[in-house]
Length: 462
Picture 1 (tube, helix red, strand yellow):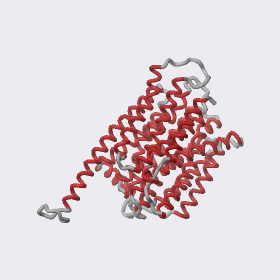
Picture 2: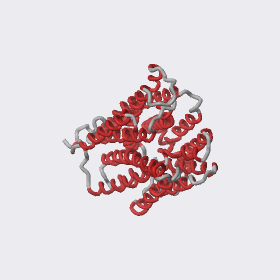
Picture 3: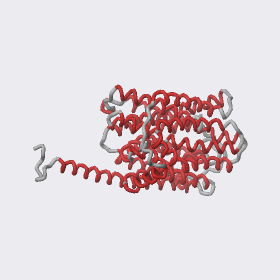
Picture 4: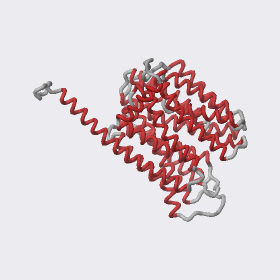
C-alpha cells in the first residue's frame, strides 16, 4: 500500500484521538446515572443496528455481480431499493407514530433480516423482493429509532440538552467505529475465511437479532398520536399541514434532502473519481478512511453541541459551504490538471487532491448527522415525528433514483458540480432557517416579558 494512504489515515486517527482525549469538563454535560444507563442502552442497540447495515453495504454490488447480473440489472435493483423507501417510507413512518415506535424498530429488524435471507437466492425476482424489503427497513432505521429516542428522553424528564450527547455518540459509534469494524469483519469473512459474498449478510442477521432481543426486553413503547379516530390518510394530511404551516420544518426538510441526496450520490461517484483509468486503489482502506473522517466530524460536533454559542443553526452554514467546496474539487482538478491516459498504476496527483477533499466532505457528514438530529428534535412536532421525517426522504429518494438512472449519461464533473450546487443552496437555506429561528425566539421572549407585566405595564416581580 502506498504511503499516501497511510499518512492520510494516520493523520485522521491522530486528530480523532487528540480531540477525544483532550475533552475537559467544559466539553461534557453533567448528567445523571439514570440518563447514562438509558443512553448506553440506546447506543448498544443503535450500534448493533448500524453494524447490521454496514456489513451489507460493501458487498451488495459484489454479490449481484457474483450471481452474474450486469450493471443495468444491478442498477435496477438499487433503484428498486430507493423507490421502495420513497413509496413505503411515509406509510411505515405513520404506522410507527400510530402503532408504536418500539414496534416499528422491531419491524425494522425483522424486515432487514428477511432482506438478508433473500441474498441466498440467485433468482432476480427474489433479489428484487430483498431490495424492496431493504428500502422499507432503511426508512425505519432513519426515522423510528430517532423518534423513539426523542420521545422516551422527554418522557423520562431528562434535560433537553442531553439529547445532543446521545446524538453525537450514536454517530461516533454507529456511523464511524461500527462502519470501520464491520468493514474489517466483512473482509475477514469473505477474503480470509473464504465464506463467500453471502457471509456478511448472515452476520448482519445475527447482529440484528441480538439488537431485536435487547429492544424487546428493555425498551418501553411510545407513540406519536395513538388516537384511534385517525387513519393513515388523516395522519398524512396532518403531517403535510404541519410542514406547510411552519417554514422552519419546510426549510429543515429541504436542507436534509439536498445534503443527503448529495451524500448518497457521492457514494456512487467516489470510486470512478479516484480511479478514472482503472488505477489500483485500496477500496476497503479508503472506505475505512472515510469512516474515520466521519468520526472526526462527530467528535467536532459533540464539542460544538456542548457549547451553545455558536448555535447549531449558525455553524451548519459553514459546514454546508465547506462540503460544497469539497465536492467541487473534482471539477476544479479536471479543469486545472491534465488527465492521464495511462491505464492502471497508482492513484494520480489529482486523485490525491480529491481524496483529501472527500475526507473533508465525510467529516462534514459526521458533523451533519448529530446536528440535523438536534434540529429535528427542536422543530418537528412529536405527534407526527416519524411521518414527517419520512416525508423528508421522498425528494431525497426521487433525486437518488434519477441520479442512478442517469449516472452513465452525465459526465462525472457534471454530477459533482450538481452536488456542490445543492450543498451551496443548503447553506443558503440554513441561513434562512437561522434568521427565522432567531425571530421566533425573539417573539417568544417578548411574550414572556409581557406576561410578567401587569395590565398597566408594571413588572409583576418589581
